[in-house]
Every structure is written in C-alpha cells, then in structure tokens.
Amino acid sequence: LGDLKELYLYNNELTGSLPDEIESMRALSDFRIHHNHLTGPIPERIFKLYELENVYLNDNEMTGTIPSGMSELIHLRKFQFFDNQFEGTVAEEVCNLVYDYRLDFMAGDCDSVNGNIVCRCCHKCYP
Image (cartoon, rainbow, N blue to C red; front, side, top):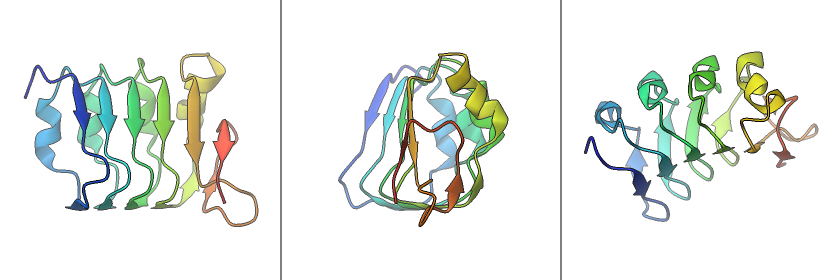
C-alpha cells in the first residue's frame, strides 16, 4: 500500500473508525472516504501522509475537532469535513494554509446558526 496514490472509498456504507494502517500509505495524494458511516476523530497518523492533496471526509459520523496537525499537510489543496459531528474551532495553523494560498478549498459545518464548527477561513460553510 505504500505506493498507493489514490484511495476512493466513498458511498460504500463503511463503518468504524479509520484504521492505524492508514499511516503506511505514504504516497497517498487523494483520499476520498465521503458518504459512509465512519466514526471517531481524525487520526493523528494522517498527518504523516505528507503527499495528501485532497481529503474528503464529508458525510460521515466523525467526531472530535479539526486538529492543528492538518497544517502539516503542506500539499493539501481540498479539505471537506462537513456533515459530520466535529466541534470546536478550526486551528489558526490550518487557516494559515488558506491565507498562504496553498489550500484552495475548505468546507465544513460552520454555518453561524446551526454549525458546530467555528471556521474563520472556510471557503464554504454548510448548515
């Protein structure tokens, strides 16, 4: 799995949390696991996948916060995390990827009325 560049597992009714083995996918650049029933937080192991450009976590049941470690993904271009159960504030370190014009699109549940996330830098906020 170390040479795998794209992993598309969306719309597969997957359950559970992201496995620890994700760390072995060092060449992964496109990670799309949206539209499943995945739970748990974003694992810190994902921050070792330095080649990640696209991360689609939306439409799952994931919890926790958007960790500041996401800022370690310096090639990240698209990050979608809406329609989950994340809470808290998107870390300033992650927003710096937007402010530095590296992260082209970030979308979360940050609608001011119904959202659970405070995101000062999201390009799109969903209710």
